Image (cartoon, rainbow, N blue to C red; front, side, top):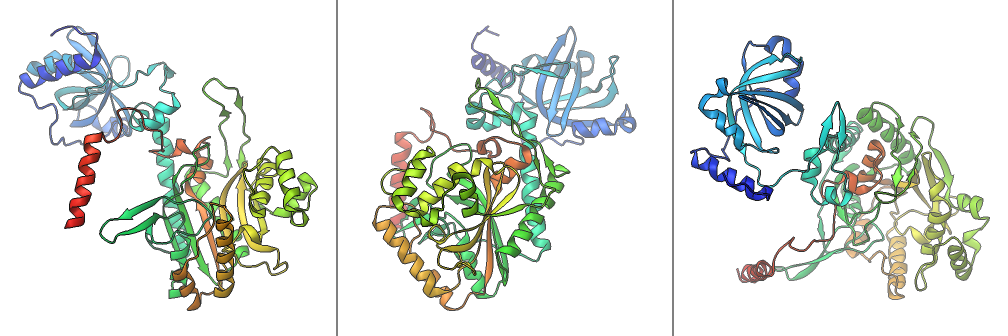
Length: 527
């Protein structure tokens, strides 16, 4: 076999040699009987008693004369393979054509080597997939990892490599799946009905955010990817489904940072005849229940934040969900930190205060944006222990019901902050169709004045409200952020299997494919 310093060329040459031997390097099927974990757990009954069949990725190969030791890794862990010429016979030359990362199946008896390691004495070896690219090199010795695959951008961009070589990444996504199961189990137990609502919408709504727009060729109309699940779910309250929830993807045309991704998972639930106080009680219990189920406790360690690979680490305190969550009015929190009564201040004074806090906004932002900016800068970083921030200004909450005690200025709304990050946004829902129309019209005036993130006027939703919607509480929970909390992750990309990244040269569709897709769209229109 020609010698080559190009690892991909060397692997391609091995692939050719395998095919020349009449072997299929990509067979259709392999019947596995045991996982690596099951062999370890059941070793006493399996030892030399029956033939087992294992399958997975080769993580090590150590030739020693007529014997080769290797480690096979599957989703449950690793097991050692004992590959001996006398056992494999004419199949032994295949071992020399294997590389780290190849997927193999092995059948044989289980035994313990002289060094005490549980192993499979391989009598039959099957190549299941020949890898043509080398996997990242991760060296281990005595349980210590060297040269780990830690480049953040590479791990996010090629998540399959991250999962392949970093077991802790696989654990994060197992915990994510457990979190979603626990959320569903809790709401199902409280008699909420899971439903599905449209992702493509004629009118986007339910939040103040910029949407993604697309075009439906056959209907010849623009549609929007939903920015929230709220308005369709409230229509279901009108129809008589009194407790509903949806757990799905939403899309916002916004920036990407440590806490934001344009595509994320949102849980929203709506509860007829309840208000935001009832919702606070339920959310607090839900967070504790899910944390216990997913992590086994209520004290959640948080990893240190590092600014860049070489930046200094900033320690983050553990989060304790055991004590009662604080409930603090937004305006009182702002006043404690800044001494300012923001509702009584002029727009100019609000802008000045925002600038002093280091957060100037471009143009002439509306009062609501300025108040939110002041709150984000002055208060949010200090909200480490779980805190419900209640009673928000009406001007920033067009879908929330007016506060019973201060109806002209405030609404019944809360946000839950933990560790300086927002996790939940909830209202006593506005169900007066005339007041809702007036709020929508205020939003339209803001949009006409140049404010991009406003709520559009939705006539179909107003029509539904005119049929009568019961008083209700509505809650939205950022699932990705909840997973961050439960895993100690420092960035939302750490808990997304496929976070959005800038496209590299050579990725995505080439020009010829883009032209072909456009022609296909036109052909579909004609049909």
